[in-house]
Image 1 (cartoon, rainbow, N blue to C red):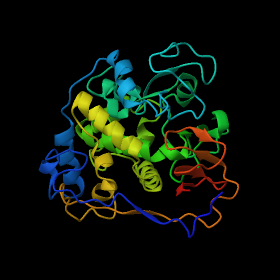
Image 2: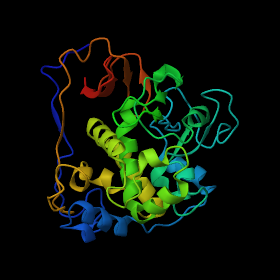
Image 3: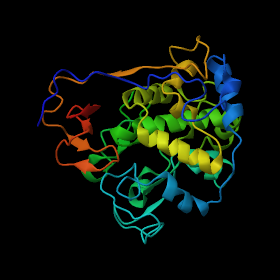
Length: 333
């Protein structure tokens, strides 16, 4: 295996656009100059309007939004599935992991009242996932856990008591390489639907996961521990090409975008260290730096290709490595 000349140090997502990123043009112009809570509200006004899909149409949409480079369904809950888009496994019954895939509301639909539009078919939080693992996730909030209740194949996803400070209930922990994806999904939800959050809290607060996740306000919207966790996940797993491509595909279908993908680190301008800095939609820049340890290639816990396939060893190009410590880093071999 060819060794890296030095510790891998990369600056990710340094950008400056004459207009918005990813061919978004002036889509975000109305948020220009806003800060903190006002920025969140301005973005809500921009991204809320969209073209609604039917629940049945989601199967068709997944063929555009969630297919890996090998032509199989991109499943972010399981590391071993190999589903043909639209094949016999689509929506089929399941008895174990790998039997079928379904339409997962990563923000559980019981948290907003069930089959209620526009949330029910909003592709920005809907993903095709393994039915068995999705059933284990149920309506539990995202969190970090030792997985004493359930572990999917290769310990990819876990269910159990929360080990992250601030909450001790049952949580579902996705694989490391998708934690940033789900964090940015949740940032989108509490921004796009900020005016609905108090109602969801009051009406559905008895549902599993609601009160651990949202605080009943439009801002910050998320509970302190959940926001802290998701900010950590977003920083540890920066925006990937998968997310950017999916954001563009979803935008082509339902005509709205996830700004937290278009602007990596945007959450810092709303909830974090840059709350007092004005947002600039066309001169935005951010830097995310990864500094893995020197022995990062030694005995990794798992290695994945960018499309989610598990690898037996590092290959030429980008490798996503989960260390024995549980930390995820990205390495170019």
